[in-house]
Amino acid sequence: MTTRRPEGSVTCERGGSGEPRRGTREWRGKRGGCGEPPRTTSGEPPRKVCGAIGTDTRAGPPALTRRQFLGLLAAGAATAASAGLSRAAGSKRGPNLILIMADDLGAKELACYGNTQHKTPHLDALARAGARFKTCYTAPICHPTRFEIMTGQYGCHNGVLHFAGRRGGPKPSDAAEQITSHVTFAHLLKKKGYATGHAGKWQLTGKIPTLVYEAGFDEYCMWAYKHNLPEGVEHTGGWEGKPGAKTSRYWHPSIVKNAKYLSTKPDDYGPDIFTDFVIDFAARHKDGPFFIYYPMALTHGPFYSTPDTTKGPDDRFKNARTNFKANVEYMDKCVGRIVAAVEKMGLRDNTVIIFTGDNGTGGQGKGQVTELGARVPMIVNGPGIVKPIGVRDELVDTSDVLPTLCDFAGAEVPTDRPIDGRTFAPLLRGERFKEREWVFAFLGDGRVLRTRRWLLEKNTPRAFGHLYDCGDSRNGTGYKDVTDSTDTEVAGVKKRFEAILKGLPAPILPPLKPGDPARKRTAAKMKKKGAASP
Ligand SMILES: [Ca+2]
Image (cartoon, rainbow, N blue to C red; front, side):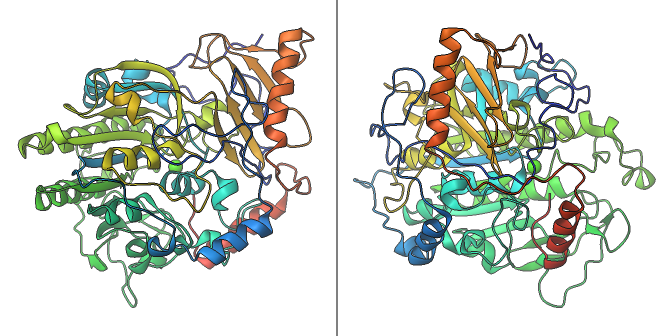
């Protein structure tokens, strides 16, 4: 039996399961797949899932080969206009929608998820008056999550299983890596009449300003890496590490706002500027509807002091893990500022706020094909729209965000491509709802597959992986490793999990051992090409 670290612990651990380093590195460079059936709109019954767990015996979509997939993208040249979109029936105005996604924040970091060290009163309040999901999965690392949440597709359908250039990821030049090849939630909501704004960290390959506009956003205010700065602009502010290394996202930040470099001062703090932009955008579009996507810079390292904890200029660029608590709490404060501003504008009853994370906590799950790497918060709040349904056992993952937003907005999801997510807006509204039977996370060819009771962590297609009987637990405690069990019930679960994964073909990549220099070469190559970085 493997007993996992209790939820709420902030002690650094390398493995996601309590086992010594199991699955922490071998996943790298492998390809994953997915098997959730394509879904379209709210309430539409999903098609058969091969060997699905539980009572669902529906068949999954035909799996696409990589060639077929790239062909699909190329043929689609997926701008919103050519994406087979259709407007939802009726013209009823949808609520304002604010999607906030913290960076490198596992579910276990929030007080409402059991953390006893971090104070997160604003998020706790949103959860209390709305919904908090015990289990929400996403990809264990930034880049594929950002594609998944924006497209409603797992990596096997949108082509982004990993960072571009990493083993299992697309090439930087592949259609999949270009945002113009995809239909994003911003395209869909914009088409429905929403004003669309983006703030914070973008982390998709490409050049601004067209990158953000082409993704469906009217305006943006984002942390800009060197290669994201407008032509000819030199960053004159702070740097993370040596000057010239990485532009600062926190103190004296490098920010581009609507295609223009924002000249900042040493005591300017990026998260404040992004949050100000969110509030300003909401105020300017209060006659609505508006949609704001705010992938935050916090709580990703480096762990600098915040405006609430800094002792002065000399303290601002000292990277210390002990600052993590302050970062989490400042992140919560930013959320609180947005909530208060929306309240003050009189928009609270017509605004849905969704809060999640892009992967597990840095150094404590991030990058691992484990539940610890995949499990992020999911809190939804919207007085007058979202019922106070409290702590939820239903499973959700970040592919569900796009169809859920569309459901609230009355917009339809694309019909010309498989959409892996399914709306959980009916549940939030207190309506009849059929929950997912499993959620899925992927990175390269590694997978994490979970039902309410059973969990599979599989970091290579060459072996079954580790199967856990989680019972009623969701936070990693008390999971029983049944991988080697000969119990009939376990054998049945294995068979069904294998059947699901069998329908999710993933190329078998050559083994790449931990520490293989090819990994470093790939990373260096990508850095040179200006691709998104972790
Ligand atoms: Ca991240």
